[in-house]
Image (cartoon, rainbow, N blue to C red):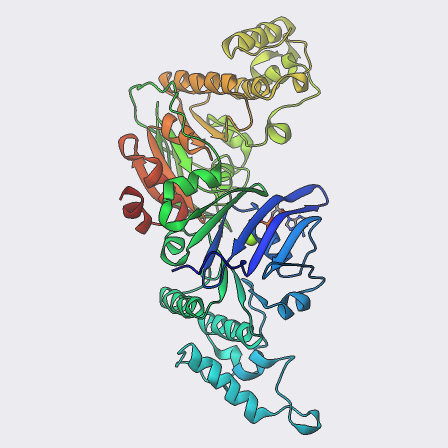
Length: 510
Ligand code: ADP
Ligand code: MG
């Protein structure tokens, strides 16, 4: 149910901008919340959600843009200002005093006073009980010590604290992240009651199933920018995932089927604190396995475990059926693993060096005889590389950093392939490069697969994952949570698994 649209929204955020040193955290973001509405904010890690709500709750000041409360432009110089205007925020880290009671926590800083200015404990207790009763919370008492309560109960105390300030706008940043299932149900029940009272709720969550359950509207942010808003009833998981990750479905992938051989990589129970939690996977010769997941789900960390940059603390790795220790990148390389990291500037390409030297760097072992580098062989190899990967450069002596992103990426790939790897790990192989270079990299991947290379490809572009993979693995919060073969890997199914929602799959297909 939504409120009459003719009245001004409770909260109206217009074109808000915020820059931190070196980071444009928000660029022109707008959204509004009406009385009795739950408006969800959705976006990958770093999209700007927390920054936005910190602006709305007076923690940060925007560099530009406006905040209107009941249609009137407002400036919050502090969180106290925001509170006075009826905006209450419940952060992930609950800010309660464990040694105080429920009632004391609720009324801390604004306790009812008796004559003479002393705290009126009797009234305070009665008010706390009235608040508890108003939300039909009957498993919590006003005089319980907060330190002994569960996370779910403590969160209810925070909500009551917000209501004690007559909050009309309640902001919750990932409120279910630390809750048990039972507590999530209780929270949703409370959210329903607050809506019925006309409170406007801003709800941040990664989880699509929750959003479909309790939100009326959703606004998607990406890289600090406003992507769009939808009525929840008019959208589905696939559309929201696409808005979050920001790529349109193009199905022009030159994927061709090649025979798939035996396992090249078999990893079992890999653990590496804090992002890799009991991961098992297999990649076979000739197979392209796509690793999907949201930013922050632990995909790059897994690649770094497999390449020995941060070796696994537990678990086993077999390469071509033999148990191996991958405890350093040197060891990984020697075992036939190649890894093209996400940021080619930092880990892949030496920008100031020539194309020639970039190509030869990874193959120095093969090029040196008795400690001398065979210059002619070096040049021949680089020229062959330029040809094979269609690197567009005037000559192999050109400085690598002057080439386009796509051509730089081809050189990085070429460097790694010089060692004839058995397993190629690619992290975002085509991010930020033009369509033509993209297609060439995809073609190259297919060629390599055809030669029997096992490829593990991390990509945030769902169409790329779906288009290029024989099999799709989905990672979420450090674990592999789903696996799809090529026929069953639809954007709805993979998107729902990325977001942690199975409920939405039915919804999306209705
Ligand atoms: P989200 O909550 O959607 O994960 P955030 O709002 O926390 O995103 O972050 C948005 C961007 O702003 C990120 O790039 C983050 O690193 C940056 N950022 C957030 N807070 C600060 C800060 N206090 N100083 C500098 N950069 C920040
Ligand atoms: Mg956040």
